[in-house]
Length: 187
Image 1: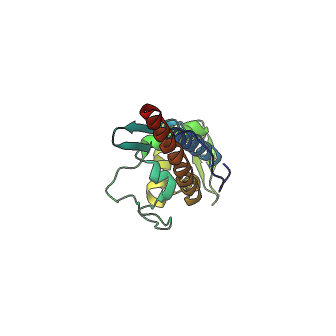
Image 2: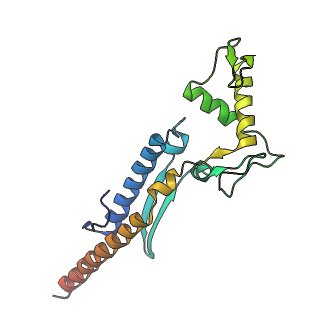
Image 3: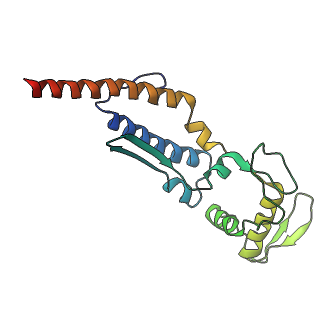
């Protein structure tokens, strides 16, 4: 995206549609770039709608409810270091389902019975996928999850300023078209 350049559009609707399409594309690309594209659930559910009705324009960017946890991160029960408003509570469930899905999609499971050596030199026998995912989920809950700021990198003040400028330019064009059409009717 070229920052600071006002793009000429024929209508406000076109400006909003172009903005929405660009946001969807860039948010998905940022998730991939940040290696946060796991199952595709978050990236593929990004939706932008622009609706014109008799009272004005409505546009909305929709993401899965958990997008901000990925964006800002979550503090663990033992560690508060991620500079985020979110944290696992001691009584909350561990994120087992998400850990299993993440580990599966990243190919992180070790064959059952394989000997694993920790950084401290201790050796462990790998358990089944559920026990490995449980260990990962427990670690996430205790230590937290660092945010990747994918949303903050895409939805910037510069991008919103460009939208404001494009809407202003297109609004003038829309108004000119309405006035021209009304004058034609008067002739």
